[in-house]
Length: 145
Image (cartoon, rainbow, N blue to C red):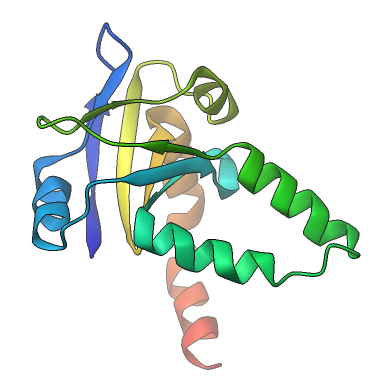
């Protein structure tokens, strides 16, 4: 549902704008509300509310007696906040999430099928460069499972 990579800056009022292609996908799929939380690789995950509920259901099934499950759930859910972009697609990212993802002003908004990832531009470029050379090998390994 969400695809592509887009460069956007946080404005002077602290708002980030969803790219028009993502807003179109939201309109087509009747998505109005999102949840933001700490993502992996130091980015911010952004889930449509329906996808958030599906992920939440999976994670609730994890045993709280296992330390790794407790740590993951604490980090994932304590960082969560619901947002509703305005008519222009603008929303505010809380400071604690910007700090987690090292975001100041320049961001990359990445569509990753069922979620959106928000990255600091430099961190995305570093991740991309580090991952680009292994992309084919990773694809080969994953496709042969």
